[in-house]
Length: 232
Image (cartoon, rainbow, N blue to C red; front, side, top):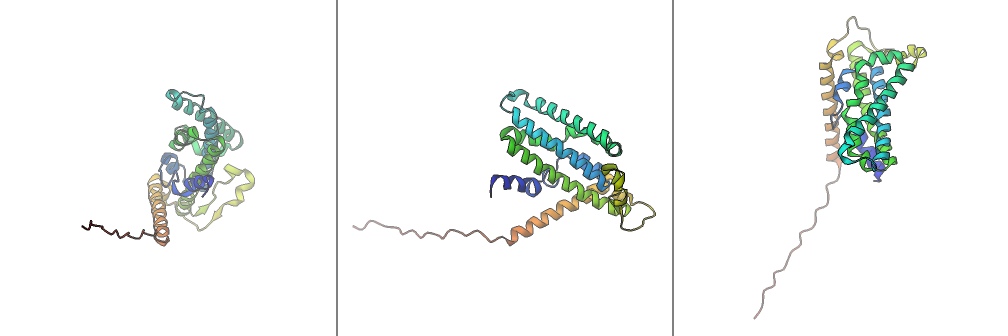
């Protein structure tokens, strides 16, 4: 397996920041009431993650180790501000929907963790690819969680897609069934915790099944040693 394949495997599944590392849980559990919000926050986090990994990798040889964390945080904060202004300009409805959790991307442990653990020790190409894969893994978890909560909570999918994609996307909302009252447990953070637990359990079950189907490693044949005694 090449190094890039290993990076992709780590980000998307084996070391997924949402399912395995359990990083960035605050926005992950708070904003995923709908699939649209989940996609919006996931894309914003991915852009910041890729940009911060690239910049940290570029300056890693010029920043003293003693002040590397403050420098990394300044880079992340600058990128978050840029993304926040872009969403404010081109998707104002989504900007209002994400609220405080958009600027709080600065404190997302996924981003600062990858900057410190990977980007500061690898080339720009590998750092950018790691940011892309970790961002994709985090966004996929957000999307699955958002879709489950929206379906259980209000019986729809892609509700409010126009906040992300514009007025033409109003017709994308899918009504799976009619509900008189929203299922609050799925819409509120306790429901997010429960759904997240089921996702983690599903991943563990899949990993266990895959491990059971793998052929057992060949054991080395025991070497019989012959004891030679001195013959007088």
